[in-house]
Amino acid sequence: MNDTDFHFDPVVFQPIGVIRTPYKESAPYQPIDGDEGDFRLVLDPIYEQGLKGLETFRYITVLYYLHRVEGDVELIVRPPWAGGVAVGVFASRAPNRPNPLGLSVVRLLGVEGNVVRVSGLDVYDGTPLLDIKPYVRELDSKADANYGWVEQFEDREHLILHIKGIPHEH
Ligand SMILES: C[S@@+](CC[C@H](N)C(=O)[O-])C[C@H]1O[C@@H](n2cnc3c(N)ncnc32)[C@H](O)[C@@H]1O
Image 1 (spheres, rainbow, N blue to C red):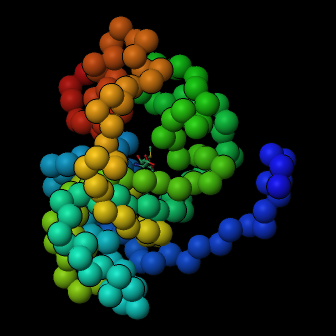
Image 2 (tube, rainbow, N blue to C red):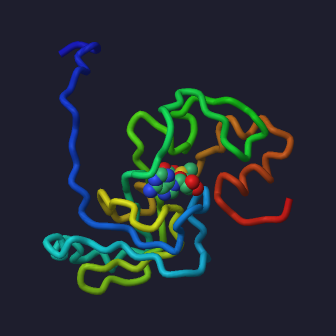
Image 3 (cartoon, protein in one colour):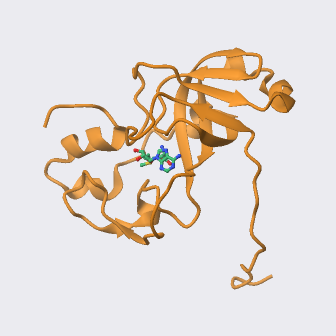
């Protein structure tokens, strides 16, 4: 194999369930930990056994398909909170991506049968659920992680609130 061998057949995933949230028309830019409302991952019952042991974790990573993305893929994006700055889509969390996959880390509140209750999510009600993984402290968090291109801005503290999806006054 060489570096130009990337002509794969399309990859097809069957959702394992659905994400239920209070958001019908607009959703936060990122998950809000203390968000109020009913946030649930409802799995197809055939996958219920696969949740065994998940309840022992405090946080989980939720992977999903952003099924309501509209418009074309944009390789250069302007995050709505970034004052017009243009960056590559892979340097952003924008939904209009070549593969519209979303990833959110949320607090696990409980597992009951095929239903996983979680803290606030940043997706529309009915979003197709692709996968769930446990969030593991040393594996999934890096103490020296930074804020990338946002660090160049004078009002970065404010922009970081946007990145984290933290509600605030302007
Ligand atoms: C910026 S994306 C971030 C998604 C995920 N946390 C990530 O970082 O990959 C979140 C935004 O995607 C949009 N969105 C949420 N659910 C969606 C869906 N099912 N289809 C299309 N867009 C969606 C909403 O506008 C929401 O504010």
